[in-house]
Length: 170
Picture 1 (cartoon, helix red, strand yellow):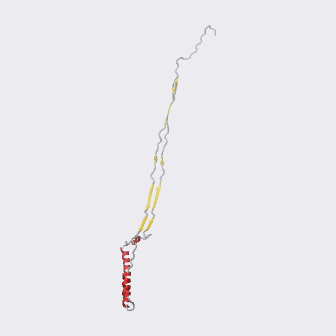
Picture 2 (cartoon, one colour):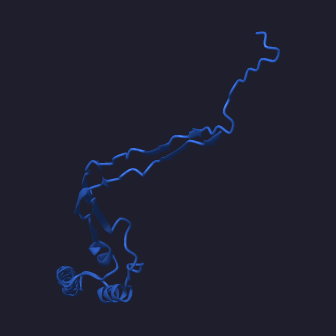
Picture 3 (cartoon, helix red, strand yellow):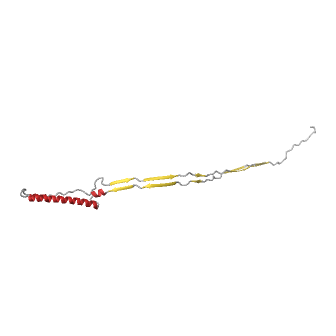
């Protein structure tokens, strides 16, 4: 008796993968922020004014000094005109002119809050449109090969039964 075994082979091919991901559509819109710094007051406090403001202030001070000088000279003239009523009017005028009052101080340091800062926040708008994944994946069927086994018989000696009558009585 001869046998050959059965053979079974199974192969699974890889799946056919077909994936597509379309790019997302994105748009970004921005509005820039705005920063405004006004330091004109700080410069004015430090004595660094613009030419128009400096001209106005100098003209106002000069006018004031001119009025004060005119008033002082008129008063001194009246005192000298009435010298017969007031003794030592010349001495009093000399004493007033010799005692001058000077203003001192730090004028180059800007005052607190003299720098004005204004900031308007910008805006960012982001729009994103996503797309679905396109999945066209297919699973492939397995490849199955089956070879059946075989059993073969070979008769070496034929079966037989032999009867013999030995004393011939059967």
